[in-house]
Amino acid sequence: MTAAGLEGIDDIDWASLGHAYGSAEDFPQTLRDAVGDDDGLAAEASEHLFSSIIHQGTLYSATPHAVPFLARLATHDGTRARESLVGLLAFIAASDDAVPEVLAEVHAALAREAPLLLALLDDPDTEIRHYATHLLGHLPRPCAAEVVPALRERRKRERSPRVLAGLLAAAGRLDPP
Image 1: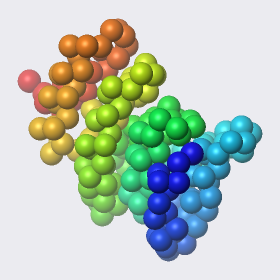
Image 2: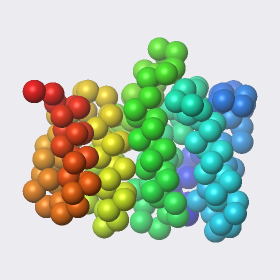
Image 3: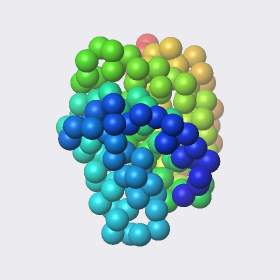
Image 4: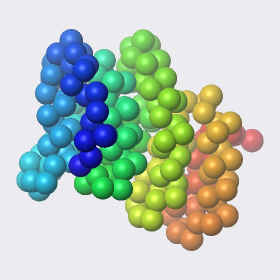
């Protein structure tokens, strides 16, 4: 885990934000546990992250505030469980189940992180690149001008058939014919 990825997490009033189980005051510790060194605790915390900030596809007021931390940790090589974090971000990006204000905040948070998230296309881990195609393909449409050229460029170098399929699907979703 990197301290830089969690910088500022304690500056947010998580108790005033909600997730599927009520107050999100537990989010900072849950995220720390999810990327920590204790295997059992990390697995339990990862499951709680998925079920709390995007429970059954529903986004909550804590979700947009979580996005920057998830993005920084997911793109940092030293972070444990990066694949899980990229997958969580992909689920968040693909969801449209929220009140309009929360959905707008989630889209804005994802758009702000788009430049950072593009680096996932060049990750040496095939699974991370695969999840990244799902994540990037579900970013808000205004991101298409930046994301679609990166997807096309990666397609020239990609060797994994699964990632290639994801690249094509993501580009098609953001820039339909």
